[in-house]
Image (cartoon, rainbow, N blue to C red; front, side, top):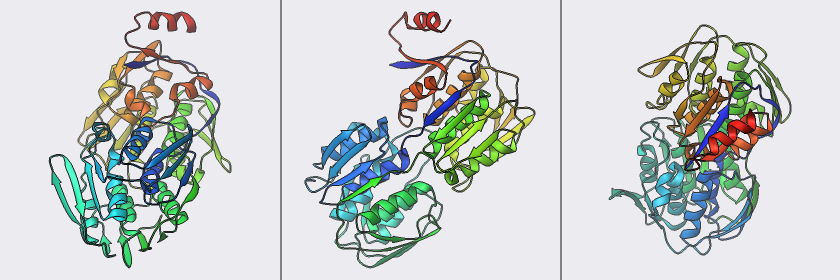
Length: 432
């Protein structure tokens, strides 16, 4: 088991290159198995969730050729099974995309109920509703979801709630269905658009992705393709918050600035300087920032995956801020850890009331989930003294070479083995 050890107090300076979007990549990898020809995917993030999904895809018979850390070739022709009951697939939420992909291609699928971070209830009722509307029978038995259909027929599907996962899954299943499918109240996140663009590059007929109405005309089959995944807006946002919190000056490269508008707007509102370029943003935090109110919303609103990071930043800002979580009900578990570092945050229902403090002090803390872990890293970079963060496997689910990128920006940060009793002492001697 590994931990991060961080000595705070140094402003982040320099440039950082953002990896491919994890959430887009997971949907795209599932879609790739729907063709019987080779698909080449570039700008793939080298993170745990991606590697687990590739293992699962290879396990059912697809050919997976990892050309490099960021390029993979996949051919789904050799798939011999639609049963995915590996213990490791339960660790990631996006395993459910294999339901839609296999159902679309083979008219049946049998996949273990998904896992991932425990940040609240993430029901799959909208996925099931969509599959049933296309003509599939769906059963949940003994921790598995099974779908089966004689044939799939397009339909008009209205989503009761905006769901990224269900929108992608219904797109996957319906692109090989007979006739037309319309998804109303669809999610509009950038990775929805990326998955749709990828499917279209394979010969699908999908229009309207990025709006709340997606129209799909079923095709007979999908073919090979070469595709590059969009940059990760959440990784970019995390480095933007870290730059502002440490009063640094960071150029965040390989981004699509439009995808970051909600994050940029809040940073500017509280007093940070943000410069937008064609494919990068520069964040300068040269002073203590002001307070604000934040409410998480589906895209293009403020992303729930950035809620812990901005809470860590606002805990250092002047005055009282309120952060309201409207997507997941269990996403404030990290607040106790921030308070151990000196933050003054009180959770009431689905809101965190934050009284800004002048600074944090280092402590032993534990990451309860992926984005909370990133927030604790931001707090540690600011804190006086040394911070040790446990359970960093959560962070590695979604951030590629996180400590290396932070170190390149000047952070005093390292990854150490829990069982190495001298590791902490070595780090302290190294950084002084």
